[in-house]
Amino acid sequence: MDRESEAAKKFSCTVRERALFEAGIKMGTIYHQFVGMPVNSESVDSLEKAIEKGVLAQPYVESVSVRIDRGAFTPKRDMYSYCSLTGEMLDVVLRIRIENTIVTAEMRYDRALKYPLMYISDIQTI
Image (tube, rainbow, N blue to C red; front, side, top):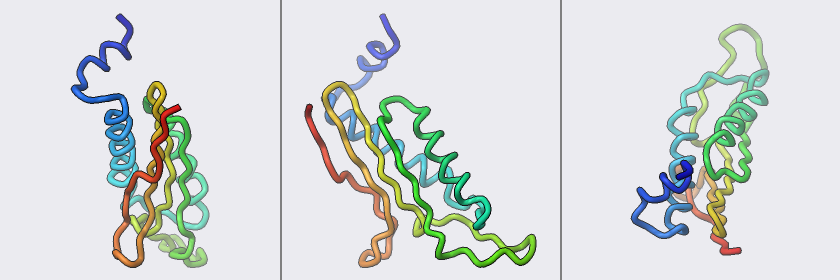
């Protein structure tokens, strides 16, 4: 038996529910693994790419886009010119595909809620 079939047997849910679960796991990983990371205007591009490549290495990820708001950065004057990544700075769009189900999940700071909200923006059956 292949690994995917073996893993699928562990889930007592539909493929759709599993795709939603996988999207949530990936979003939680991005937030909890990278919030607090030191970042500045010189390192922000490589951090975005590193987060994307790390997420793309995981099962079922069809695509991911990570953007970090550069508004928090000050011009680099010395070695202390950096900030720590916060949830308010993250803008993420993630697509998960399992079989014929595609889930799009997003994370961005919601100013009305004053909260970095993770949510499902689309579910497709193809």
